[in-house]
Image (tube, rainbow, N blue to C red):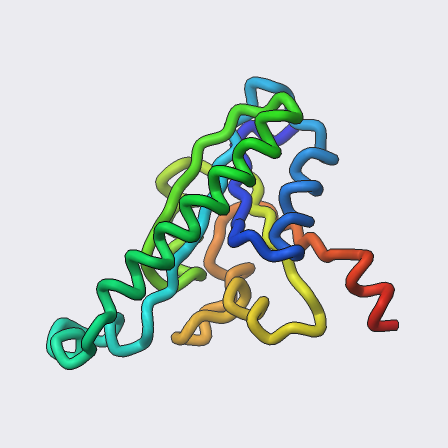
Length: 156
């Protein structure tokens, strides 16, 4: 049984599927569930401080996204808690793949759950970062990929 699970969450239907998969695993109530939202800044912010100075309003964008993700995490956490799970929420700023990998190492995560749509390129953010890092190659634990079956049925 998994004792430490990280669920990547951003409020999309695919990430809600990740919440549902976490519940379906029926982890022991003492298991630690870590709910993570990653705010991916524009590439110029990642490049360095000089590029950031040239970007007007970038801090406001990041703050707005952080506020949105705090709301999403609150709702996602409440959903998992209603199923009897212990949940800790995390908001990180950075590239999703290395951010997830760092948290896996830091927290001793045993399973990562991500939502994915085969028909939406945005979902690739969990798989491949700006540096072409593949999530499955960067984490040292199991990976569960959750899809939204209702959405997939409509596309077939």
